Length: 126
Image (cartoon, rainbow, N blue to C red; front, side, top):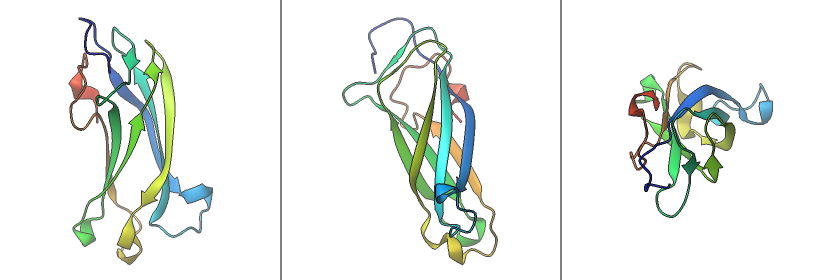
């Protein structure tokens, strides 16, 4: 990210979705695809570079298993003012989720979980 300017970008979720992998309704519950749409609402463009690349993280918590599964995507390239981008990941293999008693679970999406970026609003990253 470009940390040199006084202006700052402001990444926020426009939408989030989790679905069975490859849109196959009969896929095992632990095999998921997740998507997020992120918009830059700040006063400067987001520019990914070097070690300051921003991650987008999805945490899944199946209460009866008392375990958290974490999956991440790197937001690469640039995101201009007002621009939105959809990121999709098939990395969601949630392990023993098929052993859970229910088919529902809690999930949390987060932009820049390590707080590497200088955003105009850190409060809209969840």
